[in-house]
Amino acid sequence: MRISVIGLGRLGLVHAAALASLGHTVVGVEANTQRVRKILDGTLEMHEPGLVELVRTALTDGTLDVTGEPSAARGACAHFLTVGTPELAPNEGFDPSYLENALRSLVPSLQPGDLVIGKSTVPPGTAAALAAQLHRESPGAELAWNPEFLAEGTAVRDTLAPHRLIYGVSSLEAARLLDEVYAPILDRGTQRVITDLATAELVKLATNAFLATKISFINTIAQLAATSGADALQTAQLLGADPRIGASHLNPGLGYGGGCLPKDTRGLAHYAQHAGAIEAAQFFTQVDTINAAQRQHIAEWVIAQLSGRQDSQVAILGASFKAETDDIRESPSIALAHALMSAGLRVRIADPVVTASRGEDSRLEFVRTAEEAMREADVTLVATAWPEYRRLNPAALLPMVRRPLIVDTRHCLDSEDWRNASWDYRSMFNLSLH
Ligand code: UDX
Image (cartoon, rainbow, N blue to C red):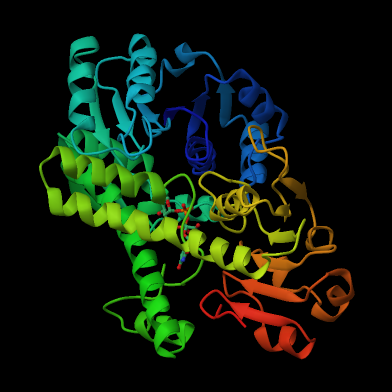
C-alpha cells in the first residue's frame, strides 16, 4: 500500500521506516528541510537504536522517500499525522496548531476514500475537531485515531512489535484499511481493539499519566522507606512483584523526564481542569509536583554537602532523560545541573551521545566520558542509567576526584564495588548528612 507520513520527528520517522520495512511504499513529508537532508544522507538528527539501519535500508530499497513537499502525499490512501503536540506554555495544555496545519497541507492531496490517521498524543475532542475540519475541506476523506505507545530507546522494536493496536474509527472501512496497513503485525497475533475517537485519544494520555503516577508513587514510598529504615529498592521490587501492580515504571530515583510523561501528565491536568473535574486536575498536578521535587531534594542535599567550599565541582553522569537516547527534553539531570549552578556550583555533565545543546546555559560544561566529568569533582551524581556507567572502575577513578562521594540516583551501580574501593556510595534514598 502507498502510505504518507506527515512529520518525521522521533515518532514519525520511526513509523515511516517501520511501515516501509513491512512492505509498504512510504513517503515521509517533513517541513524542516535540514532534517529532510539529513535523513536522505542517512545521518539522523537523533540517536535511536536500530533506526539509522532501518531508514538506510528503506531508502536504498526505494520503499521510503522523504521530502519537504506536501503534494508528494498524493496517491497514498493512508496518511499518518505524526507531528508534535507541544505545550502551549507550561500548564496551558496542548498546542493543536501543528496538527491543524499538517491536515491543511495534506488536504489538496487527498482523494475520496482516503484515510487520515492521527498518531500524536492529544486530549479527547481534538480528533473530533480535526474530523470536522477534514469534513469541511475534503468531504470524501475520513479521520481515524491510532495512538502510538513507543518508548525512546526501544522505538523500532515497540513499533514493529507493539503490545496492541488501538483503532479509534468512525467506520468499519477505516478499520479494514488499518488492518491492511498493519497486516504483518496482526498476522503474528497482535491484539487490536476497535473503539471511538475519544477513547483512542484518552487511553494514550491516560497510559502516560499512569506511568508518571507509578513513578511519583514509588518515589513517595521510597522517601517513606528512607525515613522508616525500610529498604527503598526492595520495597519497590516487592511491590512490583505483585502481578496486580507490575514492575514496570516502579524504579525510584530522580524522577521522569522526556517529551511525553511530563507534558502529558500536565496536559491531562489541564484538560481535567477545563472539564470541571477538579479532583482529577489536582491529582495529576500533584504527580507532576512530586516529580519536580525529586531533583530539588537532591540539589538541596548536594548544596548542603558542599557548603563552605568555594568553587566546588560537581560531576553529573548522564544528560539525556534516560539511557539509549540523546533526548534532553525535560531531562531531570539537566534540571538538576541548573539547580546546582544557580547555587554557584560548577557542573560538568557527561553523556555518551548528548553534546552541548542549543540554548543551554554556557556555564554547563558537556563532556563525553565519566572520567572527564569526574576530574577534581567534589561529588559525582549518576543521573542517567547508561550501561557504560555500570562498567566504571571505582578504584581507577578514586585518584581523579577531590572527594570520593557518589550518589546513584538511578540505582544502576554495584554499591558493594564502590564501597569496597573506598567510595562514599549513597543511593538516592540514603542521603542523611554525616
Ligand atoms: C513514554 C512511554 O513509556 C511510552 O509508552 C510513550 O509512547 C512515550 O512516553 P519514554 O518517554 O520514551 O516513553 O520513556 P519511559 O521509558 O516511559 O521513561 C520515562 C521517564 O521515566 C524517564 O526519564 C525514565 O528515566 C523515568 N523512569 C522510568 C523512572 O524514573 N522510573 C521507572 O521505573 C521508569
